[in-house]
Image (cartoon, one colour):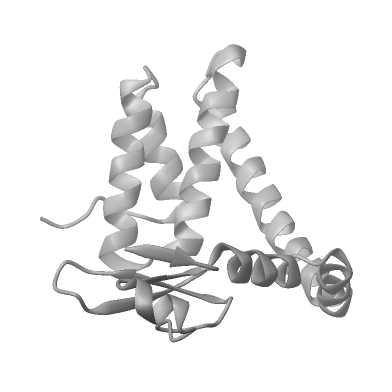
Length: 160
């Protein structure tokens, strides 16, 4: 096998005659065991696409076009999360949770909020059950976690 430019050929005569498989700098050819050619993009072509895709000016322009929508969505999400955190703090106060453990319970509530925005129905309940197991294994009180899950997010355990 001989290499010329960015493509690979199997016989020296075709290379010398300039009749390689694909004499194109953006495509590399790799020969499979059976002799069939399989085109693969060359590193040069991949880097050109990467540079075009991650051009700082293009990214800046795209973000500027969507900024109003981004701010609106982020404001709505942060407002909802603030309500969840306030309700969680009320539950933790009623349960007399020690101050050093409050961040862990808050993290649990944030994770439930996050998966609620990602999943629905039985999958949501299953994921919430996994979170319950995870935080129970981290020595949080299961009854408090269940109360947060059921009262704030109105989720119940998944049906078997």
